[in-house]
Image 1 (cartoon, rainbow, N blue to C red):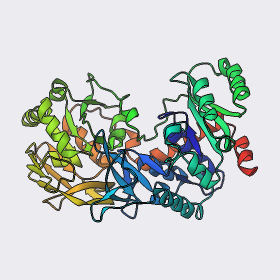
Image 2 (cartoon, helix red, strand yellow):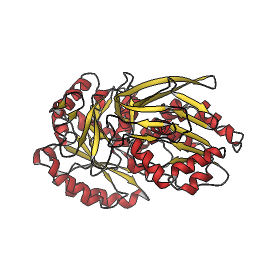
Image 3 (cartoon, helix red, strand yellow):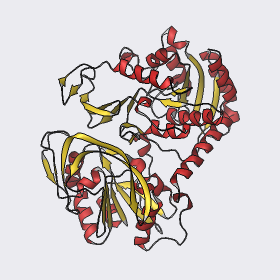
Image 4 (cartoon, rainbow, N blue to C red):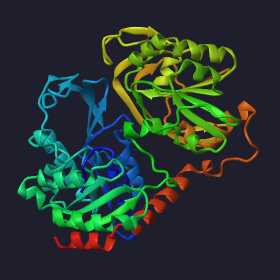
Amino acid sequence: MLAGTGSDVGKSVIATALCRIFKQDGYNPAPFKAQNMALNSYATPEGLEIGRAQAVQAEAAGIPCHTDMNPLLLKPQSDHTSQVVLNGKPIGNKNAYDYWGVRSQESGVRRIDFRKEVCDAFDRLAARYNPIVMEGAGSISEINLRDTDLVNLPMARHANADVVLVGDIDRGGVFASVYGSIMLQTPEDRKRIKGIIINKFRGDMRLFEEGRKMLEDICGVPVLGVVPYYKDIYIEEEDSVSLEKKQRELAEGKVNVAVVLLRHISNFTDFDTLERDPRVNLFYTNNVSDISRADIIILPGTKATLDDLLELRRNGCAQAIIRAHRDGMMVIGICGGYQMLGQTISDPDGIEGSIASLPGLGLLPIHTTMTHEKTTQQVTFQFEGQTCQGYEIHQGVSDTDQSILQTDHCIGTYIHGFLDNAPVIEHLLSEKGKVKSEKFATAVNYSDFKEQQYDKLAEHVRKYVDIPRLYQILSDD
């Protein structure tokens, strides 16, 4: 298990690296995270939903993703409630306090033994793969949540897993966070922590040699590695913390692509490929002036379509998008953004909340009704005569059988990963007349690009983490 001193310390990326390393070394690994809270999700081949990080880790391990890798997914809908996805299917919404009594939309209030569900999923996965690369969530030292914790040390106990603690030196206080995380465990759990990885190091590694030894002395746990911060390896991220680091400004001499910054934005990995294209400056904004000056405007997916649509009307972004489209700018809507570009969105059963209906932006001839049933599936589609791939995850049904709808200067689609496909990107950029003559090579085959990145990540982690010692720790059991 990769456990953390806090959120966004790099557990997911280290787990991804280990999945690829174990695969390279001839093993048959699989990722596992009992409970995940994320808005970036993915559709399995069976048409079920899991957290994006476990889908990425499965890719690194070279295996299809499965709900057993992330049996419990919480998708925040507001500051207080989340949709609960159990074994790939939504079972209702919850607030933090009544988590252990989830309201099922079909069966009323019922108690679910979540601990049994996640443990059963792990057992099924462990029967098919070895080793399992487990990931904790947030900090392992939230002692007030110890009795209800499903994902950290209680899960490690069930799996009889060795724990490697990941600490983020970039945010400061790494000695206190690592030592405190270990010392706040019960004596039984403390024994499970067999190693420490210091992540996101910047500067001269030699300056931390003494600190490394001091950390080992005070914690009584070996430091398996100090991993430097990297900038030239691209691994998809799911945490909203990473969104805060994204570009927020226009740039001269490039195609400016404005992703409208929604309060409940989801699946922002949709824009990773376009963001890396050297011809493009992709930035996130809810500034009306920036939207009006962009070459392409994208309305992204959202977990609260009606709430975000209402906010767009309040802050002036809706009117700015309509004006930009009228002036000939390209507007693209993905998933919830697609629904917003239509004529109306209705929620007669209150699935999203208290807003029963709102007019859309009126750029596409569709009407959408929110429904209890959720669509989750992987898809192939034709674009510019070429076969492309993506996946759908959405609540609500539109009165069209088209997953992609195009009119003048406007494209709407339910397909996540739409912009990962080279024919789509080349079509969009060629429309703008600003593009350079050369094409972005890595956009030609996004799958090959991701494979290269997993190998680069594995090489990076092998260089700075004592993998032979990690194998020794695992074999000692």
